[in-house]
Image (cartoon, rainbow, N blue to C red):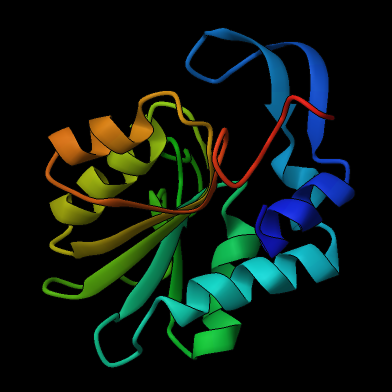
Length: 176
């Protein structure tokens, strides 16, 4: 098991029980991103690992979907000095009504960071919105891949999913 997987487990982020995931499927375990993202030692290790995969000369913006990716994106931005942006899941109906908080300009290379993925739908929706505004998604990085098809779905869409830990590989959820 990797250091990050050990830290995620030690923080108590793997919950056993019956849970409904964002895609509607039911599961007997849940990776609670808010547990590991709110622990400074875990967030620091995750941010350091993601930052090590990004070259500030090749990435213009680090972006991620609200709410879960906000601490990750911010921590990686602070580590790398690369500006960040937050992607709303829906349009807000007040203020600027922006779906993107922060700036992504046409032609900019964007690293997308997400906390946990099952099917890859959220990170793909984020990539699509970034492309709509002219950004170029160059990295799709997730902390935990639940190993339920995200890697294949992301590849089918023409991207490569990078993960820090994958359930069944670096992260064992059976012995929790």
